[in-house]
Figure (tube, rainbow, N blue to C red):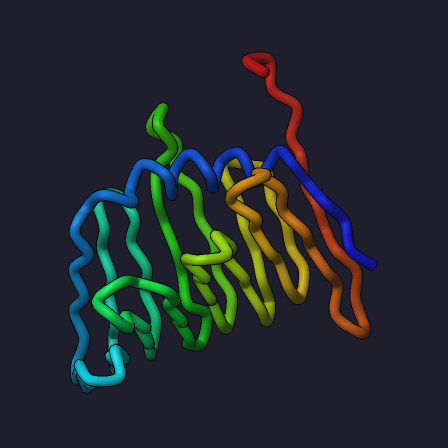
Length: 156
């Protein structure tokens, strides 16, 4: 069963849109670059930063055929993402596998996926964020259910 949430999607959209024009910096224990195929693989304590966006993972694969970013895959014993919204609030995400598809403008979190901001949280086996229409789909695993926590606040 899939559930679509707009609330969480607005957080991610504002944060990712602001970072798009910033340079990407990647640090890792090892790096393998294949310029001809447009693939680079980073392993060991990988840290990607782009403006306020920070991704930590065990492995990061970046696809840049023709020097254009088309896809990034981060994997690890929980790959993590942290960024800020335009108003300075932190957004966090974690999963075993993160996939950013630039052409489709989608972010896919798979395996113990979780997205949260302050006390609000989305959990599922798979979470897909569609950047163009600012929606988020959360799918439960075989033995579980999607969990959403929305904390009422006076400032909303």
